[in-house]
Image 1: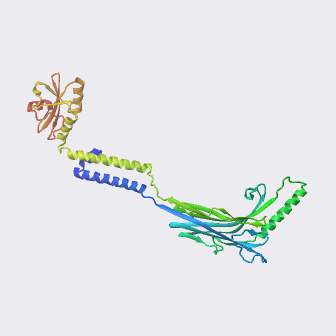
Image 2 (image 1 turned 60 degrees about the vertical axis):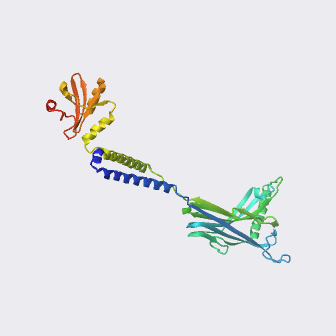
Image 3 (image 1 turned 180 degrees about the horizontal axis):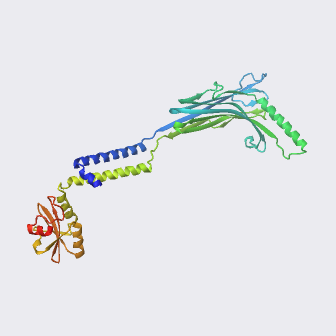
Length: 379
């Protein structure tokens, strides 16, 4: 069916058509490869928390400066209140939609002093207080939250340490009373410690960057010692980078369609090229094809076989003549001129003949040899 359509197509136009189709398919394939392996699209982001604290003493005759300088450790009995500031800055390589959330909280912790490092001792009591929280969305390439923006992410928080010390002392008193009521004596009892954690958690999410980062940063200080200092906790900053290059996956139906179109186009192009080189006379072309394909089985003569010496037997297809020659181990004789090509196999007084007439009288017909033979064949 396809062959008939190709034969009806003008040869030069057929070559041009299939060449254009192949070129289009190749351009699509190359474009896909370049889009699939295009240069990297690197995006990056960085963020950092900003912390600071100030310790204010009660009025006294020894320390005249408030807040107390950072180079000193601090005395709990003198402490009136503590101010802690939290801020945050994030920078992005390009503008994008950013979702953020913020949580500030303080955590009161009582530990049993079983080791020299209070931070490794087991927690026996914990209470968490939320200082503030916020969330929002912005499209920008920078986030900046200052300590002065109370009620928004970041802010300045006043901590009254004495109220937590009171809670700690009440705990000690109640625990001692409980032991006495239970008539229990702790061997090697080393007592309890109290500390306060003040943490600030910033979470940012940028879906276009495929970015999600959470930073928790803050201070920890002792409530159960007279002399205390601030210990920094958590992670203050992040550095992030990502390659946003996406790959276009080829689905099976698309791959099958592409291969089918490409194969059909190659076949069509090769066939039209072949047809363009073919003899315009299809009968001559048929003879040329047979001689080319079966060159080793055919002996060409400069004169036709004298069929008057044999009884002619006409076959309608060359394949029948070829089977006869192969089965009987006979060679095929050939003669051709400007009007016909004839193939003959001599078998026991019979001349088995396949003839191709170039004028369209039909293959297999014994035409134009001489009138007597033609008449015998027609009969």
